[in-house]
Image (cartoon, rainbow, N blue to C red):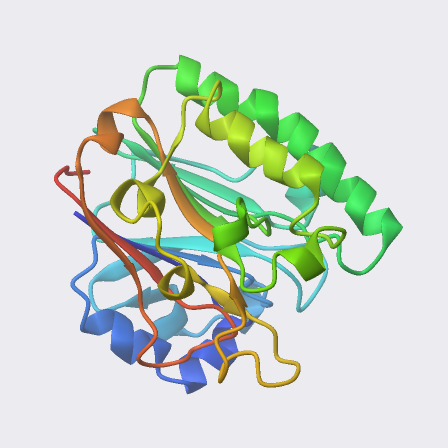
Length: 259
């Protein structure tokens, strides 16, 4: 089973850059997308379904903002578009599809880089999601949590760790949240399971300022976190960088598991 996750930074922009043509070549079972920057009225037929993959989406109430989705070959048993944390949900930051053997989550965590108000909102989200995701673990079901979490976990997860220690996305409280999820939270980082020490090839996001992409001054902020049974079924994991569809790169994980 192949699962792809990518922040599109606008689904219409990614479409113009050939994203859906690329998806058709990947034979993926699941494609999770974040930051649609679109609402239902903006979605064309080829955005709603593509090459045998049917899309399911959660849109932000604010036009041209946020939004997440999941494309899948198989029809899900159920779809959930909310966490019951209202401010998080109205921004279209969560969708969960339940299948026979597992559930897939596509989520887009907020950034705090615009200032104190949004950083405080991010902290409130993390506090709420800690318990929310712990309940997923305790349900004893198989979960894959994909998405742009807007947090680099360790020093090897970004190029300039020393210069970003006081910046959103690499704050101690944020990094501790990831650590908590991976330790007492019971989740496994699928990429790090295969590549525990990889640095420069692991980055998934580059600033549009300066020459970040050209110089590979990146951050690893996109994840696939999996529950215990799936952790032992990860076959391969890599970041696709041959083509650019947004300021993020697709994270691809192959599992010895089926929907």
